[in-house]
Length: 436
Ligand SMILES: [Zn+2]
Image 1 (cartoon, helix red, strand yellow):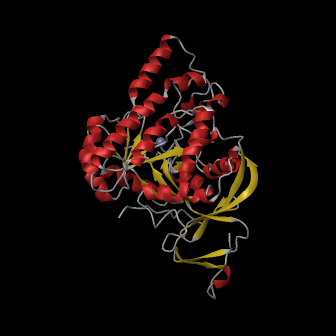
Image 2: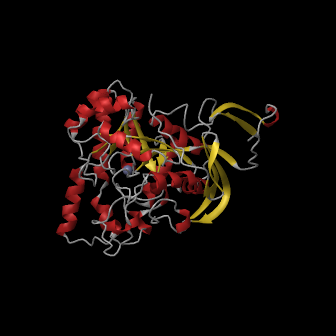
Image 3: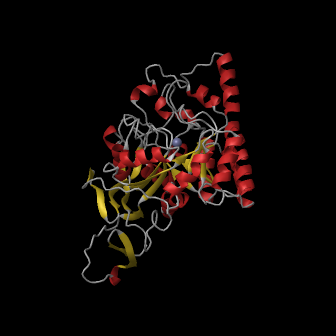
């Protein structure tokens, strides 16, 4: 790569030029041989505030993001109280974020049973899109939707260009598998029991339904946290037919494998579950081929006691993996092992999620006119994850002990550093990115 300079003025990138073409009189920051990446965009994070700030919160989540080179978060609508399913709830979230956000953020609206009529006002209020569940979400106040609800929601979204994000597992196969396991008195401390309770069929059935609806309504549907690669042929076929369906996977599905998850280690619990090593490698292939467009964290923490670690019961523990701030080195380590070029990170972890959240041109790219958000990355640093590297509220994560390559040394938000050499700098000046 030729040495290049990024010219920044008033929070924005105003020019890109060669090292020798720099205008006179500019203040220079020389990052040497380090990699300058666009500030990452994580379009799938559970911040839990307001209402469950003891689970996470704007301050801790955005500090964890800043420490990991992430400059924009998009919050999921379900774990906060009130759930972000109408404008007053969105206003409560805006109030909670004020002076607490260290990086920029936005909030997905929620679609729950019978809430379709609230969608247009949330669109007006500037949410970038909506999230729904096709199975119990874990939160009673965020009711899952069936096909009738989905149709009502898509009717409202048609023509807005806003995507409907869906947790793509249906209840039928999960319920049947769970009952069968209970009948045979399966041991719920074993990871294999939990894995069998969330079969591939639940994802496949949900994705087939969602593809059909995206095609019928010609309205974008986004599959969040794809785990089962058995659904990939459906997605490939839909893509070839021009159906407006996009898909993400999580860093943890690309890193862990089921055979190595210890029994009782509920810090690994997420839904859909982490599957076997062949599935993991097939996810990497799909990502490499462009069928999966982006990688997000689905950072979803909870208070330690909710992981039920004394009982070690997978069925009772809260599902959600805490990882915000680690995704970049996790992904880069995996990419190095598979011979994938660094450039792909900018698409998978910045440009593509920015596009999903309606922020193209402003976020997720080093381009003239975009916000001057950067991650300064040392691709060669080797380190082992310890609790002091976890910047989110509760220091629990399946990545503890992971040996990683690559480290974020600095993070810049709109033209100035917010994180450098292990410390946060200045004050919380993150702003909501309202869709215009
Ligand atoms: Zn999630």
